[in-house]
Image (tube, rainbow, N blue to C red; front, side):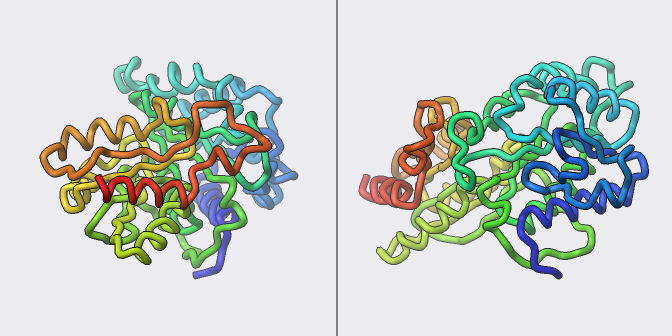
Length: 326
């Protein structure tokens, strides 16, 4: 075990992959000698050469178009989009090409070797409306993709390795607010965490709190505050947005009778809406109160009012009390 922050853990997962697969390539804007804007790929070009770790032009659709071709050839393609906000020019390459490659070819061609890494969400850099968005819900509507979000360094390394080894193209959203802020003990050797499974981080009996990525820190803080008022919270990290673990969430809600979902993305059509709809269908007769969502606002991500926009522990705690008092 070694103490790592999230950037070190991601770098370790990439290093293992590059050493394991001689054809694996890392590419994106500034990922070479510079190591990416957050330094996630630092040292890898020196170790594996400019022909395997290289910078691309500033064209996201070009990055993903090239990634699709490389993955179809059979080489692990590790593409970085510098900020999740910049992923939209590549939207067609992801949802119409990568996600449908296997289906349209009758399984003769596949881009399962494609992993798209991208930092998402607010905090850390005060990025405002073009560097702070959480676009996971756009891709959750696309069969053929997998969408994964880690909450700490241990999860980041294990989930990234599982994403790289998965037979489907995976978008790996990295909470940039936690890149250096989140540290912990991480195995130096290789390991994987199964995709599509949620994790019960804390067991409880009164109410279920569900989140993913950076928002996990927020709901854990809210759960601690609630416990001081005699409310027992079950805290769950969804980890995989697509596919998502309905069984684990439903089992928890059947036990507690209440559910709060929290995410940074705007509330309207955020992935919390899908969770709420599915869980009310699965657990309707067990619910003691309406399912609540504590999310970002339906506005562009603000710069000066970032703290007012992002769901925090006090907002989650207020929702907990509302649910308990229903």
